[in-house]
Image (cartoon, rainbow, N blue to C red):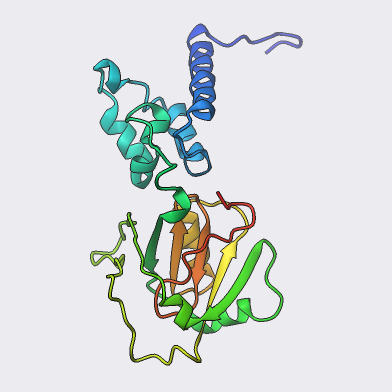
Length: 228
């Protein structure tokens, strides 16, 4: 390129960019869209032009590709790209829903070492009696498919009782990350801390669950920058 030569974008590139900006602006205006959870993945799919068709207009030519692109977030984020009807989150807020999974190779000594004393930066350590952990009836509405042939995701029955534990003395320790994270990041972070399980709330708050916990930690959202 000669000095001072200006390269202008092609008409097609300009149109693609304009279309993407329009769709992203629409994402921020869609009242039903869970922006904290969906923005990153939706942007990726829009950039790849995998969610451009409109089923509401009778055109579902891209529906399968869009669903594969959004993956596990399809149910939560399909309305952000106009693939399904907007959700009414006033009835079932994202903070009342969560996904849990047992981790395959917990390292209890590592988790204890990282959660003793002062909490690491960008995290909050919470300890409470196991009796409190077992007092809540869980209503888990979605599950992350495990890469293993034997998924470890489990739903807790309404009569979940752990009689073999001394719930009066034992304590459950969990870690909350301050910021919103994706479900895959949540699993990765909790594995790197040696956690036994994780709970990912549908507002994108992540909780790593320690080895002394007998259920799935707390159902309270306590991520400092990811509360809603």
